[in-house]
Amino acid sequence: MDVNDVIDRARDAFNVRRVFGEPIQQGEVTVIPAAWVSGGGGGGGGEGTAPEGAETPAGTGKGYGSGFGLRARPAGAFVLSKGKVRWMPAVDVNRIILGGQILMGIVLLTFGQRLVRLLLQEEKPLRKRFAR
Image (cartoon, rainbow, N blue to C red; front, side, top):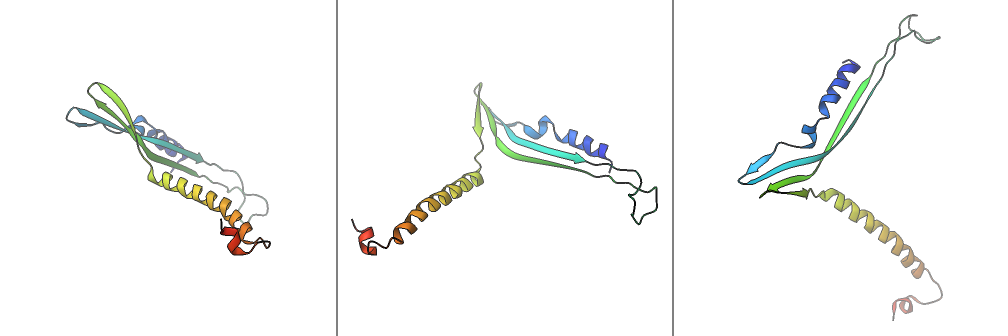
């Protein structure tokens, strides 16, 4: 596959159809789904002679490479109803769970250190440390 073919395919992949889906009509309500789309690509090149000391015959050298990636996540939907447009964001449960785990880790690190320090104090017996 030629590098120009990859670039053409990448150009075709980035269009408005990737961001906005086909409108869905149900009665008097129309829903247009939307997504976050990002991507990137890279290419390579080459040609020329092999470097000195290489085991290939002189005058042979070539190389090429290319790559492309595309990522899409649901963002939400536009809802058209009774002449008004509303934005309904998509809820990413995985991000919410990850945020909760990070927060819990910070809380455990913060209060865990304090608890260990409290337990390792040698001045007071263990019962008096927790009694009020």
